[in-house]
Length: 424
Ligand SMILES: Nc1ncnc2c1ncn2[C@@H]1O[C@H](COP(=O)(O)OP(=O)(O)O)[C@@H](O)[C@H]1O
Ligand SMILES: O=C(O)[C@@H](O)C(=O)COP(=O)(O)O
Image (cartoon, rainbow, N blue to C red; front, side, top):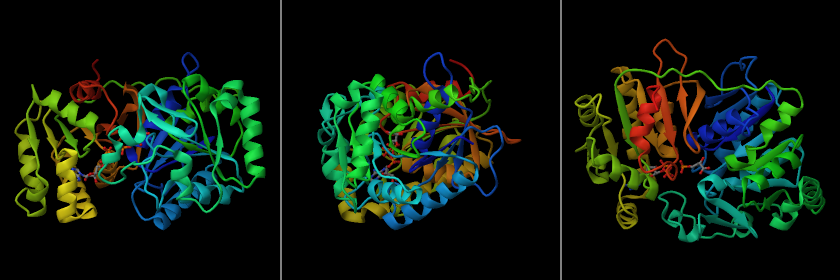
C-alpha cells in the first residue's frame, strides 16, 4: 500500500476515495479500497490507496486522537509512507476539536511540522483565500453551515478557528505563494515548520492550485484537508511507477432499494423536496422517535411497501425547528436516537433483501454502514462530485451511495439508485 487515508466520517471517506480512484483527467488513479473502521487483517496486496473510514468527527477529542493513531498504525504496517487526514471541506468541527488535536497527534507520531491544512474543494464551491473558507460565494459562517446540528461553523477564519483547537502555532500560506508554484509552496511549508507551526492553512481557489499542492507534497509524510488536496497525489505515485488503477467494472446490482436521509443540510432538504414530487417519502419526527411512537419496524414496513419505487425516509427539519428540539431534548440525545433508528432500519432492510441503499449524511452513514457489519467497499463510478458508487464483493452484494449532506445535484436520490443499478 502506497498511500493511507484516515477519514473522520464515512461520506468523507468515500469522497476522498473517489478522488484517489479517479486521479487527474486522462491520467487515471490508484487502486483504492475504503475500509469501514480499522481492519483486523492485512490489506490485499493490490490495494495502492487505503482509506479508513472512522466515525470520529463529532466524538470527544481524546477518543478521536486514539482512533486516528490506531488507524495510522495499521496503515504504516501495510507499508504506507504518505498519509492524509481527511476532514470536511466545510471544516466541520468545534472549538474543542477534532481537526487540531488529531492533526497535531498524527504530525507528532510522524515527526513532522509544517503540515498542510486545506479544506478547499472548488468543484463543490469550497475555496480558501487569506485563510478564510468560502462556500460558493458566501463566507462559511453565512453559508448555512452555521446551522449544522452538530458542528455549527460560525467563524470563516480557519486560522483563528484551528488555533482554538491546537496546542502549537497555526501557520498560513496565502494564495500568491501557491499560485507561484510548488517549489515556493514547499519552501514556505519548510519555513513554517522551522517556526514551530504544526498545521498550516494553505489557500486554494482552483483545481490548478490543488495540483500545485499535490506536487509540492510529493513524498511529504502527512497532509490534512478535504478530498481536494488528494487531487494531485495519485499523479505523484504514477510518475514514480505505480500502475494506474483504471476504472473498476461495475455492472450494477439488482434488487429492492431504499433511501435514508439523516442530514439536515440545505442541499439534502432540497433533494428530498425534489424526490417527494414523484416518489414515496416518509418523515420521521424527532419527538415521535424519542417517545417510541415511531419505531424501526414502522420505517421498514413503509420501505417494504414500496420496494421498487425509490422510497425515501428522512428526519430533517429546518434550522429553527432543529434548534428548538435540541434545546428541549439535547443535541447528542437526538443525534443518537435518529442515528440508531436509521442503523436498525438499514440492518433490517438488508437482512430482508434490500440491495441498493442511498444514505444522506456523514454521521448517518457511519451509523448505518457500521450496523451492516461490512469491512470494505470497492469504489465504483462517480454519481456526482464527491459521491461514488460503493459496492461489496460479498456473496450477497450490496451497492451503496453515501452522500455528504451538502453534496449532490437536486435530482441526486433517483439518479443514485439508477447508478447503483448499473444504468445512467
Ligand atoms: N430533525 C433533526 N433534529 C436534530 N438533529 C437531527 C435531525 N435529523 C437528524 N439529526 C441528526 O443531525 C446529524 C446530521 O449529521 P450528518 O448525518 O453528518 O449530516 P450532514 O452530512 O448534513 O452533516 C445526525 O446526528 C442526525 O442524527
Ligand atoms: O469534504 C466534504 O465536504 C465531505 O467529504 C464531508 O466530509 C461532508 O461531511 P458530511 O456533511 O457530514 O457528510
